[in-house]
Length: 203
Image 1 (cartoon, rainbow, N blue to C red):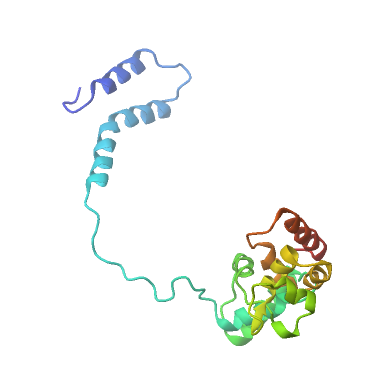
Image 2 (image 1 turned 135 degrees about the vertical axis):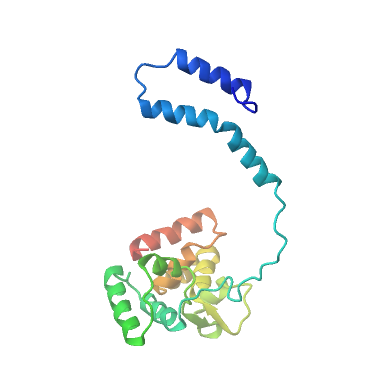
């Protein structure tokens, strides 16, 4: 027995040697013995890692932390592509995106990146004074001036609007409804309404 070997390890190894299952292979025996003999050293290494003082050297945060590093030309292209009425065909969209990036000498983002960007792409905006009356009434706590993103209009229309306001929201661009569907704060009935519209619009 090793000087620093725990008694429980010795007893376990002794029991293993004399009561070894018949179906264990030589490789299994070696792995078992290695795991027993390395137990104390693994414990010591773990203790050293936890007791080791943490580095105090400050790390400077990235200047672009929290912002996408996708070229703005790609973002504008995708925003335009997905701000249509019908659901875009992703395969065709990715092929045309690849051609666009090649022409602009840009790195083409992956399919996964494009899907992730859908939640943060800029959506079409609308001036408050140009919106129909029922929609303006649904935007009850918005400033009656400036431009309002389409996904916010959809959220307010489905949550607080009348039937005409919801009808207007149901016809907003695909990207606006895609982002509106992922907003929090819907009432139960309002959530059901926008989900029904999303199902029809292929969202």
